[in-house]
Length: 433
Image (cartoon, rainbow, N blue to C red):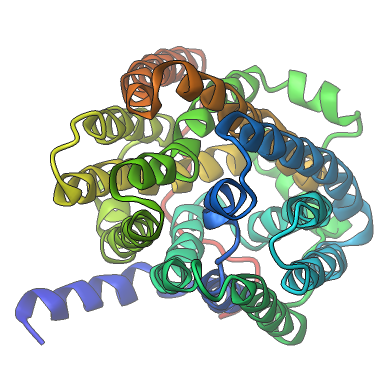
């Protein structure tokens, strides 16, 4: 192994050393689950080329799926805060996985996307419990490392899954569904055995309430909307991230359509699998380095930097030079994905009351997910009118707008909280390692 390789491995072990034990098992579960992430990256291509659904109709299906996901997330947040994280997560992710398996027996019929809407609903109920569990296990001192590790685990799996799915898509479509189900159940089994429930008890709530450095995490007796309105910076932040999710959704919608237009269905599906794998590999090899070098900056300014990378990376897709050009563009916008994904979650966690973590996860997911929900629908109509190539100048402009929005919000927040002491560097963990 080269000197740089040894140094890189040492950096990874040093960066993630000393985290809560359950975080490591969630990391492993995320690798397993993401290795079978076959269906949803190829859902657009499945509906268009296997079922003969037009781009705008695909957008409508994905919109309905997102609406179902939003409804499930809202229910899941409430359940996670009252019934516990682990039970909700395992129960509803299992139901979602079984629905994926059932779709493998249906063949190329319109029943598949219709049933996936139900699966999206069940899977989204589990989502807030998953996010709240990570919040429970961490503090502001170790959240960036913990969330970046779990994000890294997801992409280690994704580095393999969609590439395999690209070769399965044309002739072995059923195995996209069955493989997704099997890996989901294996990941859940790991959580069931090794991760305890994390719903905060009264003692932990009181400790956070007494900590003046965690003001935004203090308990609330009010309802979710009143608690959210007491945190205007978080509310505005979530509204701006609607644009973030709109732009990022082009990864799963416009990019596969663009590549199949250029290279045909079979070669385009393979090219999309390669792009997805490049995306995951960049995350695997650069997440730790980016987290180390951006840790000195506040999460909101890191998200502004990510917006610039989105503008450049997605904007490059307009120039149809060669597959290698698309690969380079993927590397650029993936740098934005890495910085954005981790720092958005850290910002939300640091502003969520300990009593409402499940519900705040669900509300954030709905607000932020609105961009992802309307993106395929609006982009589908845009493509029908102007063609898929012209999506990329649009994403460039939107990314610049959200970059400016995050910078302005961050400066206003800094001025309003100038009297608040910074969070100390001493690490705290909820459970022993």
